[in-house]
Length: 178
Image (cartoon, rainbow, N blue to C red; front, side, top):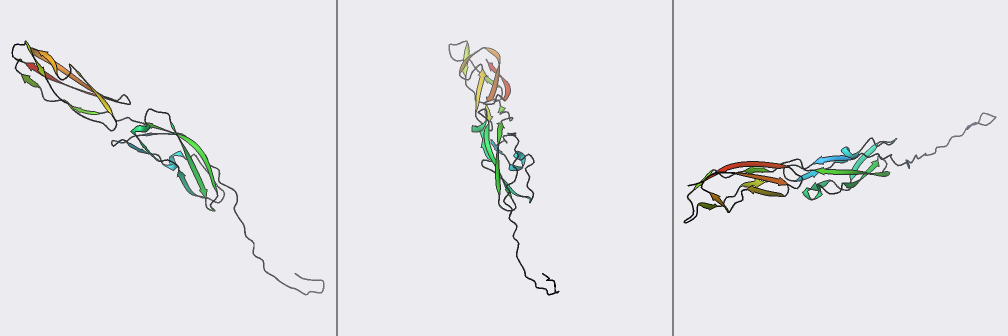
């Protein structure tokens, strides 16, 4: 500071600038597929839809990231994205996560079966079991079913495995009753 006579004096001051403005959180809905083990992971970057902050985004987090077969074919799941800026201000938004099971079951039919007729019957009761696996639950339908009475001759058996999402796999084999 200088007065009219040319005398001067100085002092110092500290100015602190505080960022009190929260970021702008912007979300988008996502769809994620289950993997072969029946798990899916949603990540914050996929849900983020251009969130911003004048001082920079430090962190993005979701309140739920892990999903399983139990999350398929139900209502979509609402997740919350938390956006934290470089000065620890936060904002949130919500998005919908839809979980899909696109993986069909795998099925292996038994080898062809050749069997003699049951005593006193013009056919044989034939039992068989396919090998089936899936990342989620499944149902198996065999036509004709295991344990059925098969007539003399050749019969084609078709086996279909269907999971809870409607994905299917089929195989067939022959039963010969002599």
